[in-house]
Image 1 (cartoon, helix red, strand yellow):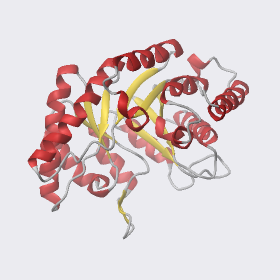
Image 2 (cartoon, one colour):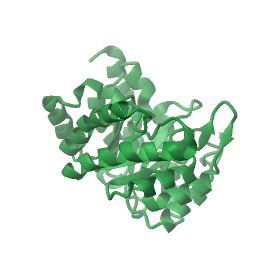
Image 3 (tube, rainbow, N blue to C red):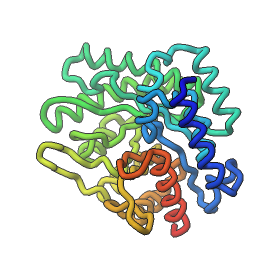
Image 4 (spheres, rainbow, N blue to C red):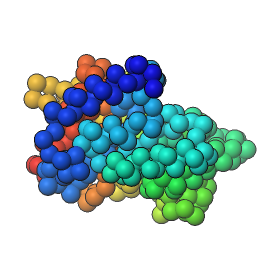
Length: 302
């Protein structure tokens, strides 16, 4: 373990030890809410890219922060999808820490809706190893991106074709294939719900992200986040509680979390709500804790 990584973990452990007076196992349920909180690994991408921690450290850190579930990002164990020894070690760590393996977020494996059939099939094959890894770890889903090219309806058909093929593979291991609003047309909830209807498979679903509703970064085109979450929730098999900036009251400065979680609650959702902190004004650990505190505060109002 390098010095930076050791110092990072020691600092985190020291800070969290004084923060939580409730038993870590009970901390996620302190509000009495039906919701459990998970943590998206991307929340610590700076520390991970800086080699201050590794993917194997993530479950322990999650438990130290009083969070019940882990949402992995494949970038941080990219070459380990087929490494059963590594996956067994990771699974043992999560079991020892008492955290649930929730899902794996998959990036960099090709375009699910690629216009060329051969490339689309290659992308499907690339995701199979992550379906297998998710099943080994006991996750319920992999998160994929529904990227494509072409006109609006053509992209829907192409993305639906690729998703359906991954779902058919996922069906064997009972692993869901969920799509996040993650830029481009996928951030247009009308488009993405249309894709869900075209796929028409029990394994397909959405991962509504409270923050990812920018359709075009160059033009600044945005989809209404509240309408978007409302449209995506009927297909949701996960929820991503994105945060960036907090105000003096500890609320997300650019999103109405009370309104967003009310939409989630009204949809009858009962799964994990995943923290994904992407801000720059707070350190990663502080941002995660601020998001956790906000969610617990909002849960009490539901």
